[in-house]
Image (cartoon, rainbow, N blue to C red; front, side, top):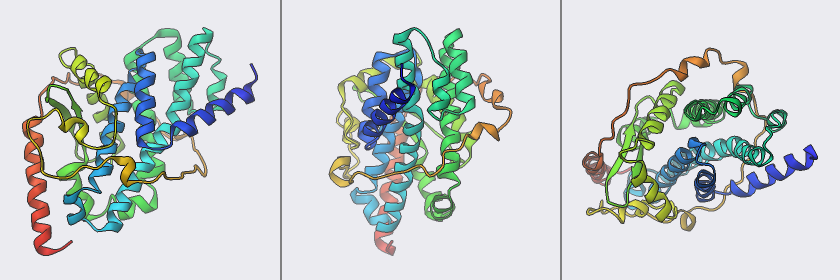
Length: 315
């Protein structure tokens, strides 16, 4: 094995797959189909679908009436950058694992060459020898939330103009911090969290979503939705299975957004400065599936009223 060639191939595959939200979603879900022991990849695919829905919301009729074009573009860039960053870090790890599994040998030193955090290097070692699927899923949640903590959440542009703005606070309350798990029978599941700006809250949410997604009462139905519904970025992906409609528009992502070019000026290892990560692995209270369809309908009614008010007073 030539290390340089191996790394080059992984980086090239990652770059191609990281083109936009749709390609990321497809690759996450395809990886899970071939490697179901890596539960995080399915969770990442569904969260990526939700990111796409949030992106295209910004081009919808209601949001165009409520928010300025500049603010919509800034919110899109925030979603896109976070989506891109997580994939750029995680997908090389997934490709390494798939290759290592075929080789029946981990070659763990390659992870450092790929720029994987020390934290995840150790967690992959733990998984390879112990096979703890739950712990690995939680570890990947922790890792990726700390990855975006520095590059997105604390970035001066996003921190000041998005996460500290009054519009963001209103958006978070009405819309931003819930994740939907749809089914083809029209039932919607999901969770909502406040304090999205705090890394601890996002990790807590991720652990809850992990439990919810793989709960035996609903996992099959959610996975069936994924298998039967190619991602387009439009909320019509799941609204087609509902018996109600919001009345808002929901465009297809690739029809309203061009490809965005990203770069990583300096990739830092967050785990060199963060201590006591073991606390994140503590068991949390068991999440019981609760259908959220009625709750979501109410949220859209709230949003409808907000956009009506915005038409009266102006953006």
